[in-house]
Length: 375
Image 1 (spheres, rainbow, N blue to C red):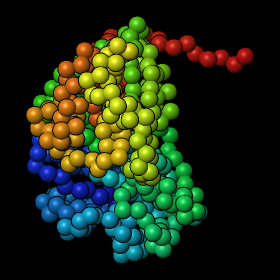
Image 2 (image 1 turned 90 degrees about the vertical axis):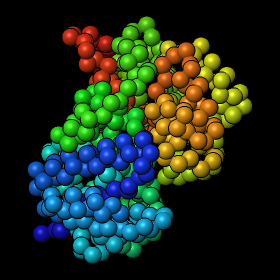
Image 3 (image 1 turned 30 degrees about the horizontal axis):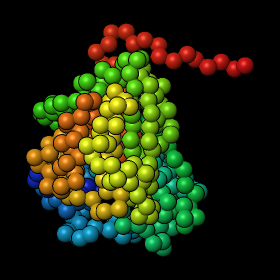
Image 4 (image 1 turned 60 degrees about the vertical axis):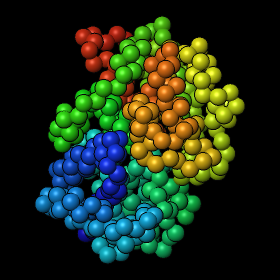
């Protein structure tokens, strides 16, 4: 019988407001994932983290824990190879600690079935930016030069000739906790397992623009603009579930997996016309906007610390030190239209959650789009 295990990696963040929210949210997501893994029959789950407190907590739940120390920078590929070698794994499931918390028992079981295949292969939630995956023939990975971050794993394995596949895009496969905005949307859609729901109930999320934006999603006469790393399938699903019209500027996909240093068009435009003019033009062309800020604000420069990014997502410019991100955040707050800021997950799994949350208080959901029939 093939030896299959699940490997979960959790990187602790800092003590600032946004970092604490994201880290605790990821821990709650991992609690729910472990519960689902056990129900699906996974016998061996390993958690890699440098948090001794978290390791002790999960070891009490029967999870094997591995303390990674203070490796800086942490190398995802080498850590994964060590686990494969030490555990003598034939196949594995991998999860970043913010991913997989919404998966069902049946979905986990299908991942385990893939990892147990005789044929070598890899199955990704997002081939271009991996959050979780199932791998069959794990021993092959020991001879490869694997990437430093998990986002690049799909492209790396495909480049090495390993057959690679993608899961259907659904809220369960695409939702990942990258920023506080992801948790705000999870709360609005009332989604999550027992641990996540308990965590969200203890929070006091108060996003000043979310309510207005959700109202716009149900208004046939309104127009919403999406900016960021959208996959066409996610946009198509979102547009089919909401009432308003949408426009989208999809740029920067694969920016972490295959960074090329080329600035997206909107990043160049922002630099040329200035932040205030950008938001003035945006308000003239649309009724609301959802913006993945990373491609626009960090196209050619390193990302600022998580505290700055997360405080921006929470619309807390007073907590942002980076001048560009502080100014952009304040301009979003001052905009004449509701703006939602976040990272890649906002325009991926977040779109699925928004499409659910906007109809929450409607007793009867109107049919939005006609069915297509064969002709």
